[in-house]
Length: 116
Image 1 (cartoon, rainbow, N blue to C red):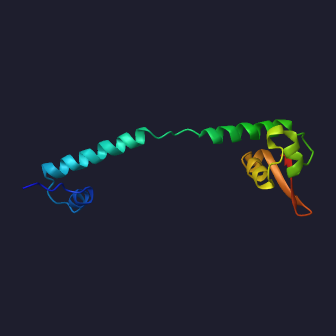
Image 2: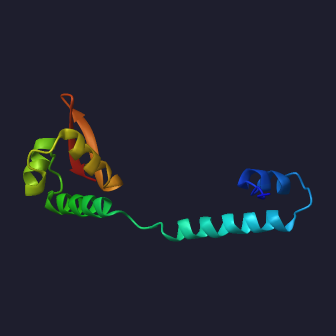
């Protein structure tokens, strides 16, 4: 007769209910712990490649801006060749990533960005 393996859910329920932990339950939960540690060790905690590129692009835009001058989405796209033809949504997201270093105000329904 084949023995049925205890499920993770059943093992966790046993522990949470405060019932006696058998060797079978202990083995099952230790296997779960090992698999979770293995999975978590593969995760990267740093920014992704796309996030790094976006941050670099935002810094280039910021350094190309002149203090006291207002820039619309098209003006910002003209500052950096990689942004040529970029949508206003992409420009807005890029400018928001600069946080408090840049201010935005509405002029005739369009966003104008300035160095804070």
